[in-house]
Image (cartoon, helix red, strand yellow):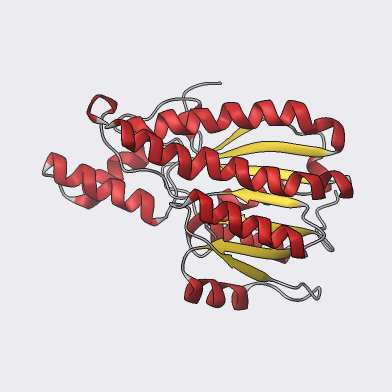
Length: 262
């Protein structure tokens, strides 16, 4: 099975922590040169140094805040002008705050839509010409299992994630003929700041202990535990390889079996 990503260039968003960082580490271990994207320059510099360099990879980074779609668009445009190859794009950014959908303000939807779908779209539009030129492309979107089964208390997130999944499926249909695949990885409860913030929020609202809330959440998962970021990253990295060339337009749940749908 060909999992070698040597001589491949990957852009990984939200890559200084959590799942994004784990994906960057995994791709580098498979031989890819990785361009990190995040808003904190110091953390970007630190993360670049942590990536594998065994195959002579040339890692770098782009400083961009996903809350500013015009900044992201400008930064990726400038990058593409200087970079003659991009083979892999991993779209990933933090989810919007939780809360019932009936209480969400319209501007919350707009903000989430911009941070996720519009940024994903601008990034994809910028790199697809390079992928077509190479005859090799992998666009991988880190979304959520809410694509298959909406999660209670995450109204804005559920809505936005669903839009991204539909966008990705449409793009997969258009780009498959060029050797470019578009797939979604749907993490379940994963050991990141996001899940622990949700645990804390539920504990505060219910007046219960955080450990009790976490144990209850873990018991709802057939695997009886939260995922490690590296377990989600492994799925994303596989989709980036030649071995996954005929997997296109799928939404892959990496959730320990929690999602109820088939």
